[in-house]
Image 1 (cartoon, rainbow over the protein chains, first blue to last red):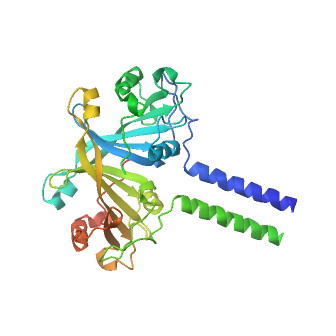
Image 2 (image 1 turned 45 degrees about the horizontal axis):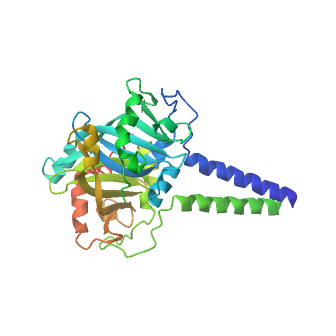
Image 3 (image 1 turned 135 degrees about the vertical axis):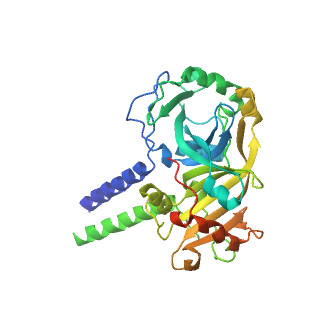
Length: 173
Length: 173
């Protein structure tokens, strides 16, 4: 019976690993972005949706904001501050009129996601990033740290929204 | 040894059920929408993101298109037609200027998701919905079939995009 029990534990462990891998937010590969030393999160494209947005002005793009499991749980509970381990990903694509869609609608009204621009992360670690409200910031382009991103400007922009733990995006039900 | 093997199968089956439940797309509760008889999918808000869009004209809103596991797999493989079991969900929210964001950007440029409007589903079942390209269509509002939705108009609108198996949305990487 002991060997059966051990085998069961082994199988359960393997099953657990598979589950964890499927929703992985592993942050161990690749090069770290400067200032906060954050590496990209290989599983982020599988994270759940927090909300969507559209920016005009100099930054014309469509955005999706995704969250890891810690982030989604915190958003749905509606409790602030976000706990350590929260990661919020901001994906963005160029804002492209869709001729296919417009043809069907019979007028110029449809805009869709074009090519991806960059991906930004906010990572909560209240000790490590104590001087910036507990948040670290990173920006990646094609999976590599974006050299052009001035990550020192991230926190000053997020400071006005201190009442919501420095996070602009609200959960879209 | 036979009892060990059986136990292993049992444990693996339980683990499988847990995995399936975690990403559930159960379609067993609630009232069915007319014409195609589709019930809502209680787990859809946890599905993964296919893409985002913005509609102007009479339909000013922000959209997110999510897919169940079958849909996401098919999109990533890039193989058409979509297999039976594919479900694509179109979520939409009112298109709201964000004063909070604009204050930080220093100009009127930011639009975010407001209140949810309705949720539409496309469900692939090549036998059941053979007369409409293998797709069934449904629309829900606050979790209930939307009485105002004329589901007979769905397929004629999707017909022009037959070359992509009647699905407009492309995967946003």
